[in-house]
Length: 220
Image (tube, rainbow, N blue to C red; front, side):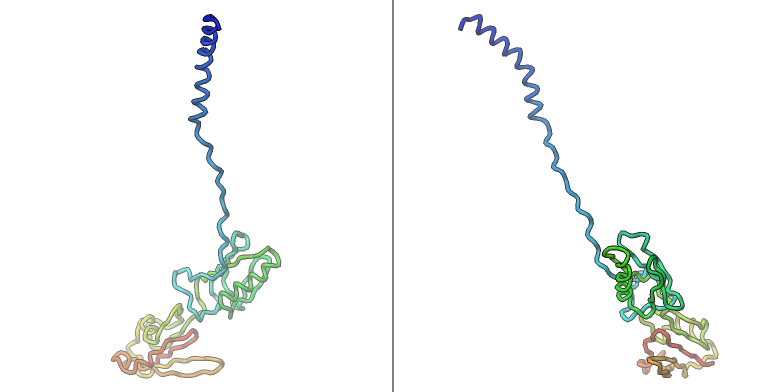
């Protein structure tokens, strides 16, 4: 190969090299593509019941009664989700299903009943029953107290506690002869309560835990 041919070849190579190098560098420094990310839908929640909206746990022996306020929650179905008040006849009304007997049922039993009824209209319903407010579990106190009337029972309440909540005994109340009227299974019984003895720490067994529907009668 002659010197002129070698020179011509080198010159051509020199002209091409600057144009090729940037492409090679760019190819080496280009950021790697991010792998595609896959999102998974949130897990389907388990059906269940909730606590009262005050944060207090629902009593284990609680059954739904008139005037109780409930939230019937359908997962991902705002149209079916409702907040309802149990009517005096014990029923609630829900979209599509109409009237449902709620009184006398536990929240879990109502949940299952609603889910069964809703399955006729929507596929695989997921239902939660939340007890917003308990108004049906009342005890009553009459006679010689400052504020007689009904009082809600959301947990345990003794006779002495009820008297305290009602403002205490009046001046002319017969503290030694207080009676508790209780009706169970159609049978009515009277239980005695001596306020003075309990105050003195005597016969504390008479300071019983009240049950919904109990009436405390204070003579004057």
